[in-house]
Each structure stands twice: as C-alpha cells, then as structure tokens.
Amino acid sequence: LMNLKGNPELSDSMASSIHMSMGFLVDDVAPIVWRGLMVMSGIEKLLRQVDWGSLDYLVVDMPPGTGDVQLSITQNIPIAGAVIVSTPQDIALLDARRGAEMFKKVNVPVLGLVQNMSVFQCPKCNHETHIFGSDGARQLADTLGVTFLGDIPLHITIRETSDRGQPVVISSPNSPEAAAYRKVASAVVQRLQKVS
Image 1: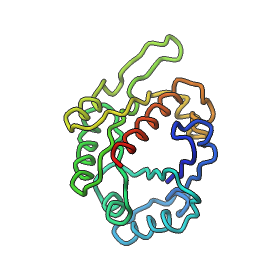
Image 2: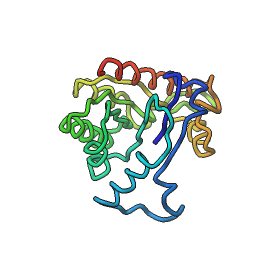
Image 3: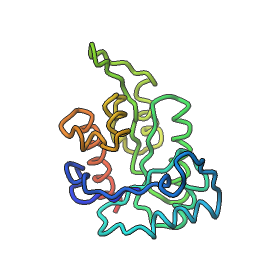
Image 4: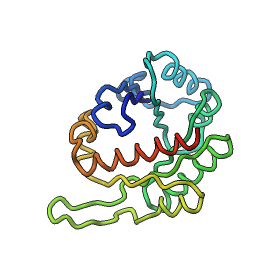
C-alpha cells in the first residue's frame, strides 16, 4: 500500500510517500498462508490502522488472481478503479483477463492495462528483444474495451533500484525507465478523472 502525495506525475514527490507492506506484519522468512478472516484482518490493519495522513491517492498492490484478497478489498473499501498489470505472454494474460472480469463483475471500473516487462534492451548493444512476446496486454485491452495505459520495460536498473528500496523514479528520475513509470502514472490519473 502506498500513499502517493502531491504531483500526479510522480516526480520528486514520491520520495515523501508512505509505504506499508504485509511483509512488515510477519517474519522475513515466514510464508503468508492466510484465508478468509485472517486476510481481512491483515487488510484492516494496513488500511485502517496506519496513519496515512492526508491522501491524494492510495495505491493497493495486490497479487494476481481473483481470490480472498481481491474480494475482501472490493467488498470492504470504496475503490475508484483497478489497474491490471501483466507481462505480454499468453499465460499471464489469462490471469489478467480473469482479474479484469472479476473487477467488472463487482462494479469496480477497470482503468486499464499496463504491459510489464514489455521489452528487454541489451545494455551492451542496445538491441531490443521481446522476451515475453509483444503487445499482448495492448491486444487484451482492445479485446476488453479498456484503455492501454503503457509499457514498462524489462530493465536491470528497475530490478536493482527496487531491491535497494530506491525505485527508479527516485534514484534515476531522468532515466527512460522512470519516464515509463511517470507516463503510466499520468495515464492512470487521467482515467481516474474521467471515471469520477
């Protein structure tokens, strides 16, 4: 969960965002094998027992699927919209489609789809390779009649900076990778404005 304060373009304001994770509620190596009431209790702690301050946006990053977590969230808090994130490969797109259909069924607007790991650019020769296929999420967005929100590349800098707790939009704000995140964030904000 993140409270994104200030500029919807996610520039330097993201440095002041507040982060909370289910991982903070359990030991580092303990698996989270929760269902039903335990899931709802954890969600309740994250949503209502954290001092989020004044909110501009509260982003809830959920695991893929259509299980207890997703249903508990949709049934217990007002949701402005859902963003579906998927790699372009067929097997991932099946889950993405199920997720989009679930949100539609429970009357949560699907703001659009994001294509993650869309292309890999070799750091040595700059050759681009579509490791997981190309345009799968874009095509699924067309099929579902929802907006395609943008591409996030498969890039080592994204992985390295995330692992260090300094996402690329903070650690390398002028990089093409950070620009990809800002473009998606801007598209989400525009869709939220249209939906509301």
